[in-house]
Length: 622
Image 1 (tube, helix red, strand yellow):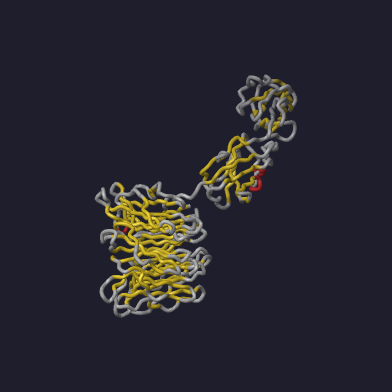
Image 2 (cartoon, helix red, strand yellow):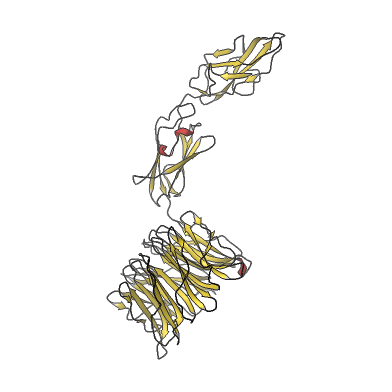
């Protein structure tokens, strides 16, 4: 037995409200069928009585029915109910049709997400249209929506809910930050009855700016230690770290992240040479070519490097120095052409000296070069390199009279390394920080004594092309022994930011000091409210903004914090807690930024189980 909506083919919809037709078949009985009863219901369950507003049940000997003079409701479903009477006077149960929907009007958009005029919309968020009725999914294609930013179209994909009352258009690529976006849905959308939307629907919204995203594990296993990171011009990051392995050895591992896509599975950079790895470092240029370096502690302490090529991945590790003396503290930089410089400490047979090697893209590594031949032992070196290939290496070294000097050597493309220069007459401590700008100016930070303050001071000296190093260093503030190494970054206009730790004047703890350099004004202090802070790092992007990260002890837990100093600002207005409260201890954050404003920070964290529970974490500014 089957009851169909309509006089012919079974209808799913009808476009009028005053008529309803039905036909039926398959009712049989040994005594024969002598009569049918038919009525129209608003429910698929036939109760035997028509609802209010619809005609009462009618009897007929025909297998069709046509009701006229109706006032059916738009966008509502109705069902024909039929039962049959046999020659003995028995009635069969009611049989219902599968129903039809009255469609008197075209589809319309009842809501959008985001709403027009919205701001701070995520750059990956879909544009969703909700309709007042189910629509025909085949009438919605990526071409149904025009998504534009400054008149330029943005490609999308489309997906609808199962009920096809809501469809979302998702950008294939992230929308640009802080831009007005216009979305227009064309008037080609049909409902399931075939009616077409009467007019297009448009909305505008503004995307959000970059923000720090929630931290992620960098696909490392326990323990993961001492990470470093670099960011290319597309916002892709390379991270390297020391990884504990099942054999008990500590090996060099690396992973790559893509914007908004997370980290790829980690891979070991050296599966050939046995030993434990320490102090990995990595650098990458805007095009994505990178170099990682590390110390390998085996039968002796050697220096290895591996190259990363976009589309190919990591190459085989290369031994950079074959001499027997142990190497330490390598630093690396990569220029815009893919050439790399590495500096490190290694004995020249008399004392710890500074050495350098250069990779020519496509030509391999050159022989190690001794940067200074003097008798005094050098401290941990600093290296800064900018896109043109210019670089500066800096270190502390006592002269023949025992006075510790701040020394530097500059790399000039086409000429090589300059002889060591005295950047400052004296310095103290075990390290120096360096930064280099695209305009050729450079800064060094170091501890030392100053006539302007006590002996425990943080000092700065500046190199200006054509003028040389400052005749006297500038005192930035107190920096007694026991504090962490100062951090320094320089933007392409020669503006700098220095961050260091000092004892608090009100708390029994260390806090951060921040100083900002502008060529027209010099150095000035920037307030930053921290308590129990340590291990600062700073990076500059290509737009004049600076990112600061550090570890701060909150309620007995060491957590990573961040702050941003935007271009044109006079203060740091907000601090960001980078990770949720946890039971571990976060350590040694590093931060890097690229020319488009993206940034990445990495650190490692003891997750409460001691050394063996360390994992590497990262957070993206995107």
